[in-house]
Length: 126
Image (tube, rainbow, N blue to C red):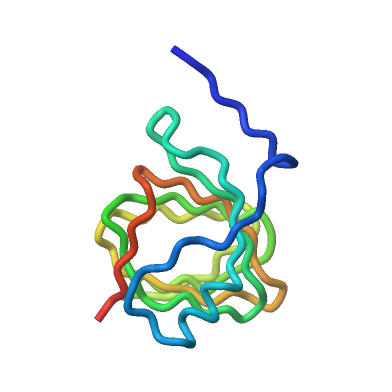
């Protein structure tokens, strides 16, 4: 048994790895995303503190793992393919593996906690 502690002040901000085949516009938007790694597989979790600027659009995509998003600050319009809902501070979304979704960041930007059941692997929706 073990405990892994991450001090946020010591965790560097990075730009996430982006999937192959993105358009120049998608690459530019992807470079605006900032992430602090909090867990890299310890205890089976992959977690990040994510920051995105106002108005950023995350195109519809899916992952081969489940995710939990918890909004820390700001907001986003979350689109699960069937409906759109605004997520604000302290709201959460649990996203099943394979579920296609996208979102648009609100006027004040957004920061959220992202917890994954596996290392990030994204596929753009067709």
